[in-house]
Length: 315
Ligand code: GLV
Image (cartoon, rainbow, N blue to C red; front, side):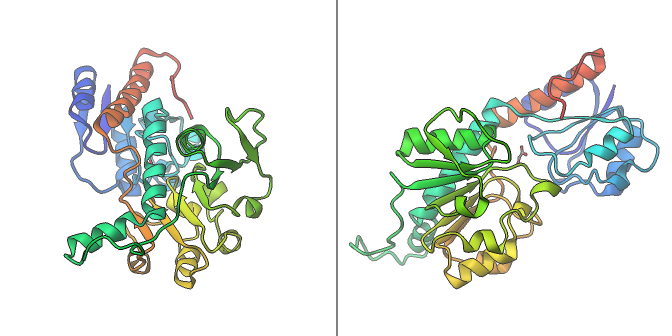
């Protein structure tokens, strides 16, 4: 089976793929354009794509040889799944437990860094401007015991909730599309998004795609208290980036911790200028064992296709 791997994988994953398939490993760090995606679909039996590869409707318009997009990552908003289906191409993803935990860990990293002004403190120290301990220097927000709202209580949202509840004694509330009978810990479901935004910390954990684009718009941001911090580990376009910048500039929220951006890798200069924003380069799952687990899950889906078995992780 000819497999096109769109980005460099860990050594373990590349070795596994190469042991089972006739693989082409692309070394370009940029995502595939729709034309490159179309060429991959025409030339290979399966593709292992990832975030940033434009498998838009246009990519499926020509001849298609591929039968599977074994996506590396849990999010697949870069793939037009309906167009894939119509072209006879299945799609799988990698909801590995390691991915869930790593992404939730990164949400806490951002929450703590933003609340406690860790980025600003590090910049001050590295600039040689630290003059010594001061009772009133770089005062941030206390985290333990505060209220967190989790927007999207799926696997990752629930993992964030566990960390907030068990680790930091926070009061957990959440907004979720469907009612959740048992969130697994003391947590209150709030039916109205704007009401859910009224918390000390808001963590966005919904899937990306058309259904959630700009879910966190100017009105939702306006519902946050002035001391509130917004954390986004989901997809950048879930938040109206211009409205977020306006809220930070106006001081109507206290901070933002972001791992994702609307037009990655582009980050607006106005966001970079914000001292109260913690900005990470989409590091959610960036640990070797996590990327190994994700890659091996994509590999298992390719093996299933080759053996004519049901895909373990269809989307
Ligand atoms: C990373 O963002 C993923 O979707 O797995």
